[in-house]
Length: 175
Image (tube, rainbow, N blue to C red):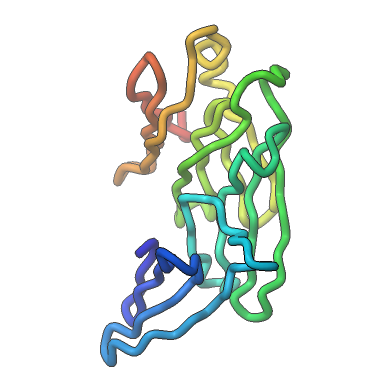
């Protein structure tokens, strides 16, 4: 499971990689999206966000697909249409991992926060634009820096993200 509403649980099916949903009242299963294309799965991201307003999914694209850039893939649940959005390499270092494994939906800001190899990045769902968070630049520039796999939002709207070797950082967008 990767998402739930009051009526449905959304899942990435283990073997088929299809997006399915279960009705929590009837336990009926429905396939929303078949993800295999020419026999190969197209969903490489580990994080999936359901945008119920536009009825689409947001996925992190695997860096094995695009080693030179990081990105989000939007998939419409209405017609299966796919739209890719990529962020620039903010560190200008082609040798680093310009990617991410986790993201977090921020309903209050209508955005997606990404803990990437370039540091903390915010994607505005409204404008479809990425914004690099410069407040962490001194840490991200360190030779030993690497992104962690954790990110979350606390009740005050602060972003918690894991890093290597520094540990947990808390970013407050308000300040």
